[in-house]
Image 1: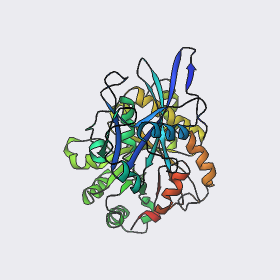
Image 2: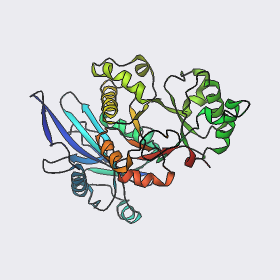
Image 3: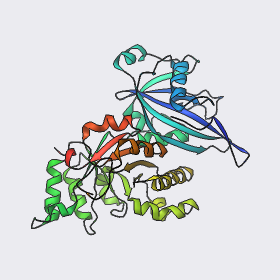
Image 4: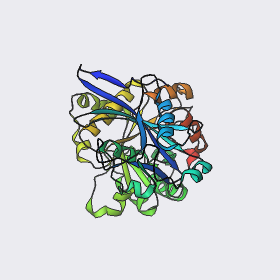
Length: 360
């Protein structure tokens, strides 16, 4: 996989440093280093990684840096692309190319007591729950990675309301069906287009307080009297059409008020290069202005789907080429099943999503 040169010149003056970042873990144990006080962004924890040399790809740099810093050989481990982060520290601009790498049980047993790296830096394994809770102070550019790590490998999508049109009260049956059939602890994209259904969404979340939800961006306002339900809602969703409507303004740093006002991360839908470019622009703008991040792209359709029978599927190879363009974690959608999550990762994604195959 080709990557940019280690140092590029932007506007003839600003140097951008490309860095490979390895989010190394074994199950829910994650490996962090600690930066010395004398270093840039010192006295903070960080994921393992370093500069990408001019002759290297990002994955080659990962293998070299992890070996040099920890002694762990990840040449045969799968590197799952999470995304790219473009961050301006004021005195330095960096592009972090971030990959998640799970070590084997044998590797973890060998290195689980590792407390000092080969370059003298402190190393520690930390629990994912504590990492995501912010117990470990990370550089600003790393904090979006924590939001990315909250995405599971499988995401359920609700049936459209029209699927229950034969019922005397479709909305009641919609709630009942999803209450009974959603997997325990699932992350669910509540894809419902009809207005006036917010109360039914709230009802489903109340009945299934074990699930987390992605909701349409204009279907919910954060309310103090809905504290429990607020905790279940982890992101808002923009369709491709909504994303493209925002794109001209975003290019001029005119970010829509609903994005500025919300503390919830965004998930967007994309189907082509143009929309992925728009999603990348939005992600950069959110990072620049310290807004809630864009944490995922639904890229579809991979395969033929009954939901959109007239849409030609991309196929895995074309899907993979589009996924490589994204600066954000990519989720496969369209004719997929939960067992295809590994296939998505091999093609540049982090997860799969769907309707029919994702219910018990």
